[in-house]
Image 1 (cartoon, rainbow, N blue to C red):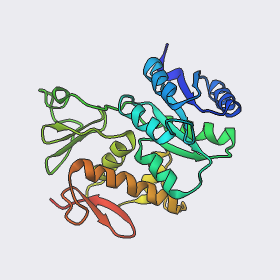
Image 2: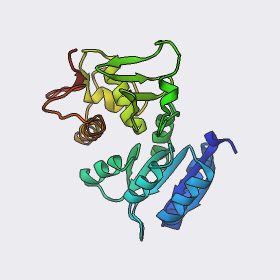
Image 3: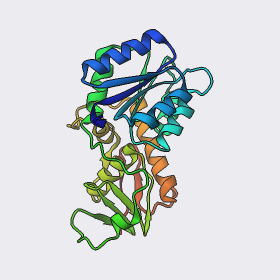
Image 4: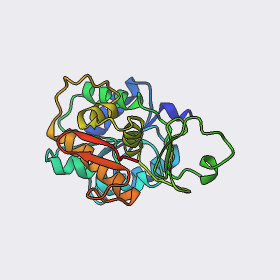
Amino acid sequence: MDRARVAVVIEDDPDIRSLLADVLEQAGFAVHTAGTGLDGVRLVSEVDPLVTTLDVNMPGMDGFETARRIRAASSTYIVMLSARTEEIDALQGLDAGADDYVTKPFRPREVRARIEAMLRRPSAHALAPPVAAATGADDDAGWIRHGGLRLHPGMRIAMLGDAPLDLTRSEFDILAAILSAGRRVVGKGELALMLRGEQWTGAEFLSESDARAIEVHVANLRRKLGESPSEPRWIETVRGVGYRITAR
């Protein structure tokens, strides 16, 4: 089956599970469903979906742990859905590897729109890019370099020295945006809209939740790069605005 047309719904409530399946089927997906986190992890492994929707509050394995297990082995887009409205829950979901977080009750049209926005972003995602793919005899075309850090947006490979970086889709896109901008400051609002597949004009409102989500992604990036915000080697914070690469 064509992976581009496959989706998985992991939801313990049968009514919501059926509703989400209908939404995705109307969007042209072949949909598979699971009622528990463990069954969902197995199902994602079996059918290799492009999109996975995931409930947070499930009996047994909750959505956060389910997302971590899925993300460890799959590049599927993950949309988490939860009745929890606290900002910390959304941030925890993003930290677990989700690409988006939608609160319940939700409108079916909103869920479909959020998924379509995600699909406008590149779908390729190397969970563990092979070193040979990034260090072969190819020329330098397409590579962005800064202080031993190399990134190829087209191949979606990021390398630190000779070691591949295991980045989520959002982390990769944020790093690519910051490196591509050179010393220009990339605002949190610009990054937030970029992750939704939308264009930043400067007039959009940046919610506190969006700002915190970007901060979580950047914090995860720094952890994987092994750098400290107080002594950055690659990503410099411009307080109250956003981020830029450090001076060479």
